[in-house]
Length: 100
Image (cartoon, rainbow, N blue to C red; front, side, top):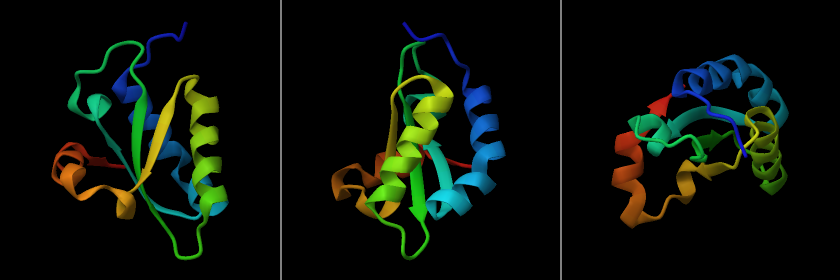
């Protein structure tokens, strides 16, 4: 069972880790989206992160970023590259997204 984590803690952690993930995983920008960004998450909700990668980033950067945040938060983290958002979901995801 995972413990409850507040959206404010997630924002703070993402903000404080931004320089590390920029260097380690070739990240340009992060945004929180989904139930955590909307404020309607349950205690066991996953964490949805929208990411813009720098040129040259690859699948290892994506999977490494996911594992990095899952280790920190102790729960499932979905990392979605902004350029990979399906067209039918783009508007809803971007409406929820809160840039870090």
